[in-house]
Image 1 (cartoon, protein in one colour):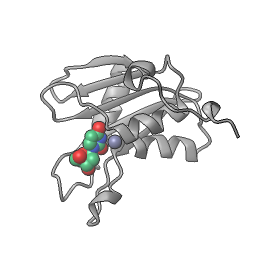
Image 2 (cartoon, protein in one colour; image 1 turned 60 degrees about the vertical axis):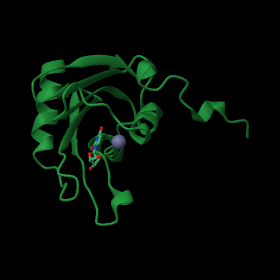
Image 3 (cartoon, protein in one colour; image 1 turned 90 degrees about the vertical axis):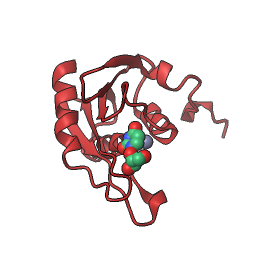
Image 4 (cartoon, helix red, strand yellow; image 1 turned 45 degrees about the vertical axis):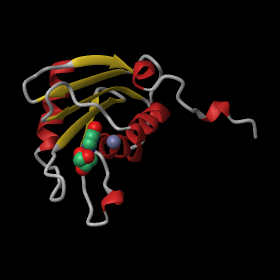
Length: 131
Ligand SMILES: O=c1ccn([C@H]2C[C@H](O)[C@@H](CO)O2)c(=O)[nH]1
Ligand SMILES: [Zn+2]
């Protein structure tokens, strides 16, 4: 499973739209009945509107009715395993539980496995709100 997910993230990375940073990222989300949703980073001339590969993949899964992410892989050309940004960690936390497996890798196959709880300890969740 882990190898296939990382492979799918590598394939998704080929679609990256990154004319401003030149940094291509790919992600693959495992959800539902072993379905995989791929994502790449999509930049914008208004830089702040850039969407990371992780969020692209998550939003694709959710928009297809998958609200429970079982695992995610992320790949980029980094020295060590790529490190997801804070925004993506928070968005991931919305659709993962603390045990969700997170595979972070680079082009050399240097891979680390994290849990969601390790990726964003103390994540803010809807259940925290007293409304
Ligand atoms: O984990 C990460 C880190 C960065 N990026 C993208 C955003 C931007 O397009 C480029 C440089 O930050 O890489 C991702 O997609 N995922
Ligand atoms: Zn991000």
